[in-house]
Length: 445
Image (cartoon, rainbow, N blue to C red; front, top):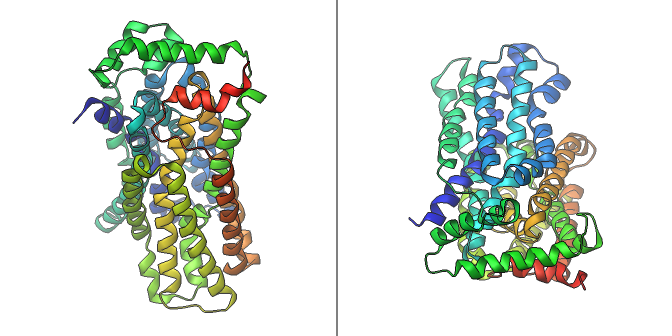
């Protein structure tokens, strides 16, 4: 195994912990509410949503340690946060302590969506960057899948305290991840631009590709940074308007595919569709497995077909599945296998397109000095709309049936096609400095 692949896999484990931490709470949902006698409002606020608010906070402020301390130290902090959260949640004696430790885990999730893609994009060769950064997203969906499997296994083996083992077992992969991060080097671009350590950067670049002209690479990184620094632009300025818009829209459309609506509320959708026994076709583990398989396919294709092509493929899958589901609700053509099959197509479309592309694309489009802030912006946008959709969905499902809801998401996917066609650049095979020049170079004289 090459060093670059090994380092990328180690760092991408932050994504596994992200997915595992997000999904594992499903197994503790009802047991915790019954144990502590919480009302629905208390349970939703202190137990189920607390990690999500931590994620939003971690996404907003994750750029600070990523830039100031460095990518690798931030990745180590993330591992410690996951470890503390897992152990603390498992041992919590009351809901307030449990929610506090879940908040800590959420901070780790939010920070990981900033630091991990940024790090991998900065060590990856241009021709392999898509696949290597997409390993993070693969680990996210694999972590979700393994959380569901773990919950099912522990629930079958243990008694009423099974939920403590469900949330606590995350400590094992968190410890492994933290130890593995010690084995990865610092980002060469961070060393050059933040520590003026050309020798240290050259050593890392030489390990990545022994045949590379490290002197030329360092000169290109410095030249791109000097061009950027001459503008003296603030982050929210005309110079960075295009990458900021691209990051915002990519994250916005990621959530307005309706993916969290489907993943979090699949049982309600299936019940409304009068599916009965067919609901087994869309068990949470089944959804997780489909996401894993099609994310793997997306990773295999992202550096061959490109980011835009995958987005077109996914948009077609979204439009077909969402339109058919919406039509089925409008015409009351419910029951049978039609809706489960279309939901499977929907999840597959997400895995191969938005699920694979989002963190790759956002990590590529900002200059080296602004990458962490740009990643933080995209991550915050993603999590803000995830939280908003999750919060309003119960009201929406109470006011409308599936017809207008799925039609709304279908319209959003038409707008996504417009975004890809008119605004989204192809970044396949282009160096980070080349992308920087393409997206921000025109703003400088």
